[in-house]
Amino acid sequence: MSQKIAITGMGIISSIGNNVEENLISLQSGKHGISDIELFETRHAGNIKTGEIKLSNEELVQKLQLSEDNHVTRTSLLGMMAAREAVESAGISDINEYRTGLISSTSVGGMDITEKYFYSYEDFPEKQKYIDAHDAGSCSLAIAELLGLKGMVSTISTACSSAANAIMMGAKLIKNGVLDRVIVGGTDSLSKFTLNGFNTLMILTDSYNTPFDNDRKGLNLGEAAAFLVLESEEIVQKENKKVLAYLSGYGNANDAHHQTASSENGQGAYLAMEQALKISGLSKEEIDYINVHGTATPNNDLSEGIAMIRIFGENKVPEFSSTKAFTGHTLAAAAGIEAVYSILAMQNSLIFPNLNFKTKMAEFDLTPVTELKEKSINHVLSNSFGFGGNCSTLIFSKS
Picture 1: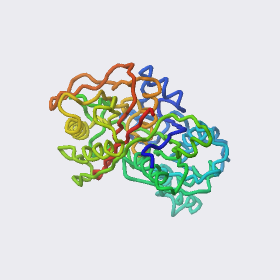
Picture 2 (picture 1 turned 120 degrees about the horizontal axis):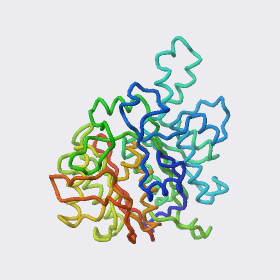
Picture 3 (picture 1 turned 60 degrees about the horizontal axis):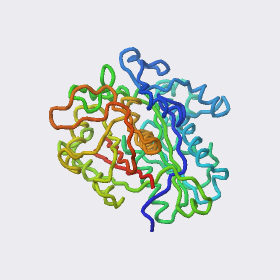
Picture 4 (picture 1 turned 180 degrees about the vertical axis):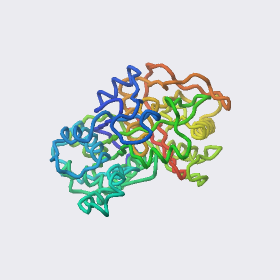
């Protein structure tokens, strides 16, 4: 059985672009999407910067050609945009021609709507129609309905590693002969719950996030959605399909250390990277670039850096960068958008810069790539680590 899973389509919407092409242009030009909050109702507007997508829900509805009386949440709308692009880019005309599934992921779910009406449900019973949209699975069902998908639909919510685990689950379903094709990824919108929650944890910066910088203060939250189309080699050969990249390795581990903090020795990250390398069959020397989780929080970057040194060796860590300085931390969608960026890095022989970096961390000798750099890339390792110690690593390969 082949270890590789073909990736034949991808779609994305983030604060730096409404599709794959726009995201690539922003990454190449160094244009970030961190800004003051304009569309999202919060008392923190003007004080906290986020990676906000500058499209209103009404504009998203128009782009998706939905009826104006729909009850679709922003998280669902973003996911629908990205999933539709992914399916179109894969050249799929009949979504149900093969055994096809959708594994979507989210942390926010529909709470951007339900938190808005929380205090008025009792006084205004007509608002209760939005309650069903609260749970995470409603987003997946909305995406499946837009695509006309009649096959398996499932939802994963493992905090910031969610989309990575969705991608991993999709690959396993294909490898084990359950499905022939799976649309995988994640979507999350901004919400009061997450903004206030991260602010309470005191891990939001008051400016722009600075991954792997010694003076990093914390993260910027963002909103985004991204999906990949995974297909079996049988379909690829039968349809003579163009392959964008391959998912060659994946790993998931949990350091069981703390509800919101990574372990000091990076154990979960270490085990996830170790497993992904083992499944890929690659040696650590073959990794050309690491798209790090790099949230710019004091805890994460230190823990991840230690884990990378443990895996690759002192002074042997491959070139790396965090793209979260472009988009903010998009929670469950993070691994999805960074999967797209990893594939774009290989396709265009580019390492995208780690913006805002100035000073190397005192704890170790690691410096990210800070300028757009041309490099032939065959294998990218992408890290995504979630609250509760849920750590996931994906490896993407050119062939």
